[in-house]
Length: 161
Image 1 (cartoon, rainbow, N blue to C red):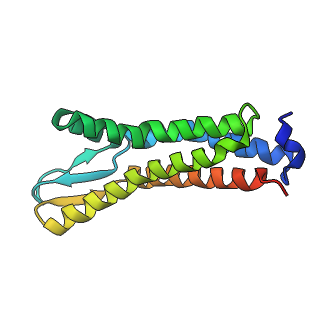
Image 2: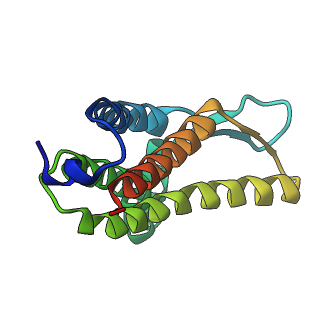
């Protein structure tokens, strides 16, 4: 049993649920990356092209590889790194001193959602084409918020009392 469990205000079953929810995000994030974040089209009467995180990174890569790497870091690497780091803390393989770094990584992942929302507002404001949000934006946002919530619950549960 991990050493910090002796001072946790939660029982072992709750810790198992917390770990399970955290690990479920390893499945949910890749689905969110492939799901349509938004649909965009130049003219109102043409079909809309679906844009996902993965297709967006691919499109940006052709124009600006450095920006594509930054987007990939925030959208792909940061969430998975956070999930794995939190799992290591919850399983007792790493110290709870890692929790502030986990929180920072989660905030970096949230930056991507802000950029997507900003793009939608700018595109709609320009009035050149048509932009509609897709279900993937809600799934991706939900994954990031769930990840942030899980790390916050873990931090409170592991705080010395």
